[in-house]
Image (tube, rainbow, N blue to C red; front, side, top):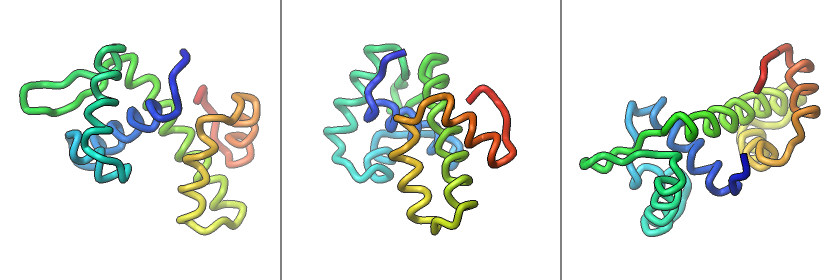
Length: 124
């Protein structure tokens, strides 16, 4: 599955907002990611064209099965990496920011080693 980091970030944010608010709209994504509404509109168009999201008449965004698979993978990595960085003494703000940078590029081998280190298992 070859997808750009920015698309992964958008999919992850859709999932995070859905978990926090129960719904996701473009304006919420723009605010959460600190990007413009036109940038989000462009990204949503691409994600919709590639089958990762659906948008209803009320402009609410939902993840397709393919979109959810990617979003869950990235979000699970983000949470585990944040936990690991906190465990080794990184402050919370930096741990969250650094986890966001690392989650896209870390190898599966290294990620699974981190999961073992923090006492988690799984196919994340």
